[in-house]
Image (cartoon, rainbow, N blue to C red):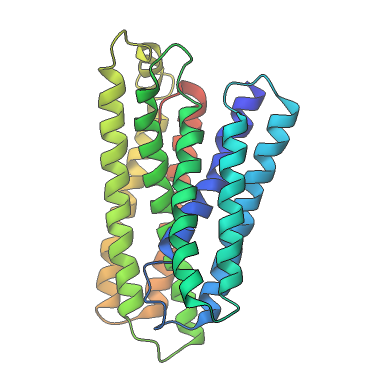
Length: 275
């Protein structure tokens, strides 16, 4: 139980690292000062190293644990290595190398999340059941990364006052896609696991939607609804335009998504369902 609790919440760092790196592809690279990419990527890279270090510690201490596997440690190691290489390209003029390293780092991050999600599939269940877990982690990572990157990009407008609104509007559109994608992915995952042959998750569903954890499920759904409302408010604020107010709303959006992800991981810990 101790290892499961620690590992379930450790994944939050990995999701932010992967989702944040993905979100850096949204603002046009040559329209925003390079310093934005350097500082933001460094933050996400630090979170990636926290994920890798935590995975290594848990694997060394709990070698027999089902949720911590050597494959997970290796995949996160590859991710932070490629991510580190990408960050280094931001300090030199090697666009050809950067153009190759960036998608490789993003792909390795999604693979690492998939391997991590597969570890939550019960031992006696087919590996195909890991697809809903991976999809939930992928879309959750994208939503969290988009929200935080939108907040950080909004701050950059205080530094680069003449910056066009196009990058922030593109980030807003990306946020909308990511939140909706997560809602769809988790909904499909719930239906898929509910209908899974032999019903290995029936007790988990009884716990999640019964009296015990139903308020956590309600909170999870409420955070998604709040996030969608906030995105509409940000869109209206940018139409004025008022970037400082939009940045403040992105702050609330990032916190809302964070609370939703924490609730989802608590449900994953208590029920084993990718909510």
